[in-house]
Length: 115
Image 1: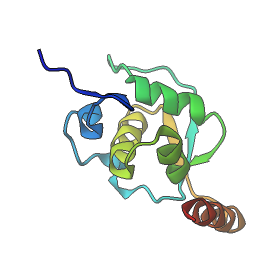
Image 2 (image 1 turned 90 degrees about the horizontal axis):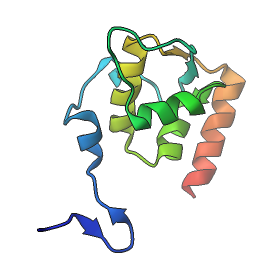
Image 3 (image 1 turned 90 degrees about the vertical axis):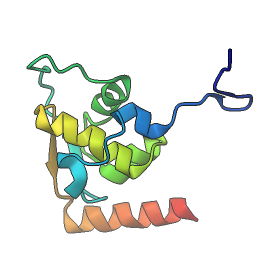
Image 4 (image 1 turned 180 degrees about the vertical axis):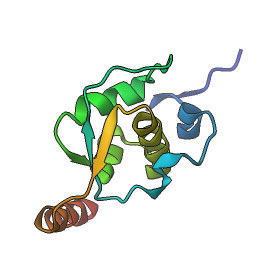
């Protein structure tokens, strides 16, 4: 029996397996500096958030940028946009624009992290 294992990293799961291979969702248009906030609503219509989406909901109790969500989850931006799109479709998060000064500060922080 073959195990998908990386001795240093542990079990290997391709990020796109987390989103069922989807590459598009209503979250496709999310700007990197868009601010994500939990609505603190309850899932409806039989929707059950994935463990990653649960982590997002716990993370965005205060406004958090899309870029910061992706960074904190250590997942590709495309994957995070799909996860966020699903949460937005089920009204579990709201998306807002960062104010100009807040947006500039976030961009500076992200630029410094990239160094």
